[in-house]
Length: 118
Image (tube, rainbow, N blue to C red; front, side, top):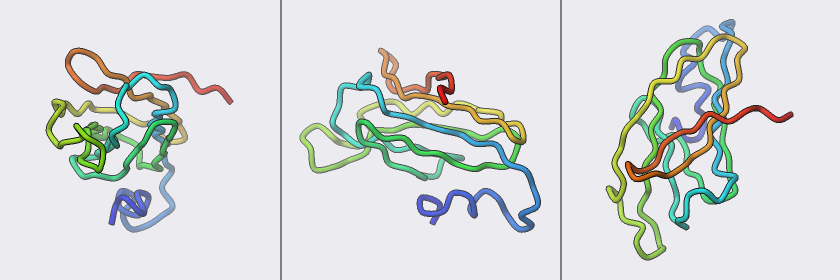
């Protein structure tokens, strides 16, 4: 399952290939919902984020479709389809790290580029 091992889902056979790293963060309280937010790569659910969480994926270089959706859950108002699904294309280079944070606007959830602060 991709959610458990994103590396193997996207890497394919032959692991001598260099990778880029995609980080998706919900560490800031910009999205005022207690609902889980699903992270989709190539239209497949690969991660779930609550407030104050982040996830990362080792991906082969090239373009990847990244989307966000509010997921159904136990909390009131956490119904699927409440926000519009608009995936974006992120292009990764070998050895590159790209970080995005989840933000919300009038058009729904979106990814906002975030500087690496290491």
